[in-house]
Amino acid sequence: MTNFEHYQKTCRAVFLALRETRAVEDFCQEQAIRTDFRAYILRGLSRLLPLRQNTFRHAIQPWLEQAFLALPQTELPVVQLLSDENYPYPCRVDIQGSYLPCWVWGASKQLMVISVIEPRTGQFGPPEVFRRIA
Image 1 (cartoon, rainbow, N blue to C red):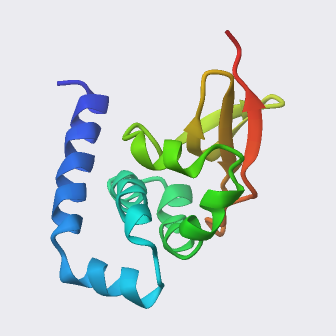
Image 2: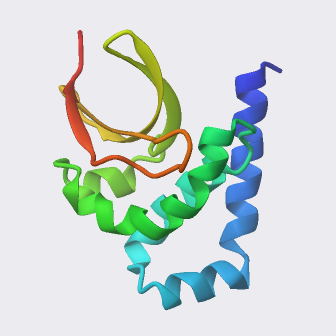
């Protein structure tokens, strides 16, 4: 099993465990997170929790606080984002010669929506649209 396959397996287990947790349900009600956004929010959280890099560890709280507010700002149809289980996910992207920690909100055939993560605070930058290179 490769490291990535192990990571995917861990993320799936974390997602299933979170989905059954009462604390998650309480948090979603407290933050008034729409029911249809919950799986997307949990997928993102389950993909952040197993990571050891500080940049991504710092992003956990901002993700929980900002994700449902940023979804409508991504310039992609929210329904498309919510239904595609491949998104969201953390990564590092080469932007002008620097590999920056990023968050991929979603993508279409031509576009990808990414937020740069501020390494020290974990805060997400505004969602930016990039053209995919064929």
